[in-house]
Image 1 (cartoon, rainbow, N blue to C red):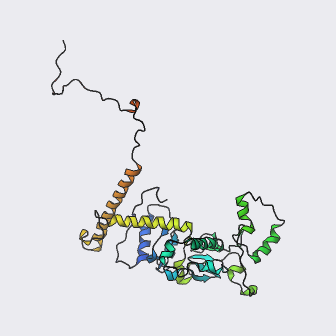
Image 2: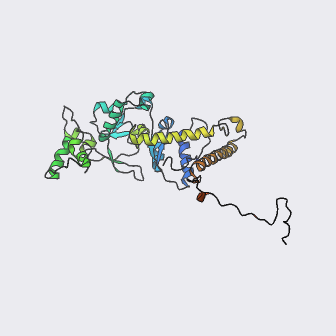
Image 3: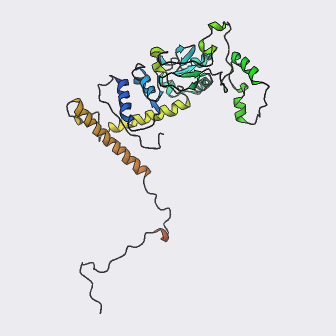
Length: 336
C-alpha cells in the first residue's frame, strides 16, 4: 500500500525512447517476478494505453496485474461493444445505460477530467450500477465471465425482464426495516430501473448479454480496442485512489533520478559506450537513488522517540569517573 513502505525502483530496461514501450514494461515485470512480490494494480500513462493489446494489456493481465489506464480526449466515452455489452471508458456496461451516463466523458478535455465538477462527478457515480459484475476472474487462458447487472442474487439495477422471473422465484414479499441503511439500499426501490426501448424486439434479436445472465469474454473478442479495457471504473473513487497515488510515486522517483545529485538525464554523467556498459551504469545510479530513498524513509520513520518529560528521574545518570588518574594524566598522590 502506498505510504506504508518506501517506494523504490525495482526494475529497468535500456531502450530507445518511445520504442517497444509495452514490451519493455513486460520485460521489467518479468525481471522483478523472482523477488516474490505480490501483483497488484499497474497505473500507467497514455503511452501504455496506446500500445497494442498483445504488447502490454494481455501479457500484463496474464501475469496477474490489474490495469488502471488514462485516455486521450478522443478515446473517452463509448469505445466499443462486445456480445451486446458496451465498453464505456474501459468498463463493460449494460447496453441500456442511459445516454447522459454513457456520454458523460465523451470529448472532455484533460482539464475537465482532472478537476471534475459536481455534475460530472454525479454522472460518474450514477454509472456504477450499470456496469457488468465479474462473476468469474480470468482463467489461465485469460477468459473472463462478466455478469449482467440485473442478474444474480444481488442485482444493482431493476430490469423488467429479469424482475418478472425473479418475482415468481422469490415468493412472498418480505418486510424491510426502514431504519436499517443496508436493508434500504438492498431494496429494489433504491436501485435504478433499466428503461426498455420504445420499439420492442423479439428475443432472438436481443444482444447476448440480454438473453443470458453471463457472457464469456475472450482476450481477442474486443480486437484492438481491448487495449482500452481496464479493471477499475474510470474516474471512480477506486480508480482515483489507485491511479493518482501510483502515478505520483512514479513521477517522484523520476524526479529523484533527474535531480542535481544523480541527474540520470544528463548524458555527461553516462559517458560509457555500449548498451551493456550503459545498463550497468544506469543500474548503479538507480541503486544510489534507492539508497537515498531508504535513508530518507529511515530518517522519518525509524527515529527514536525523545523523552516526553524532563524531570530528574528521566535525566541520564552521571557517568562514573575513574579517579585513578588526574586531569594531568599523572596518578594521584599516595594517601597517608
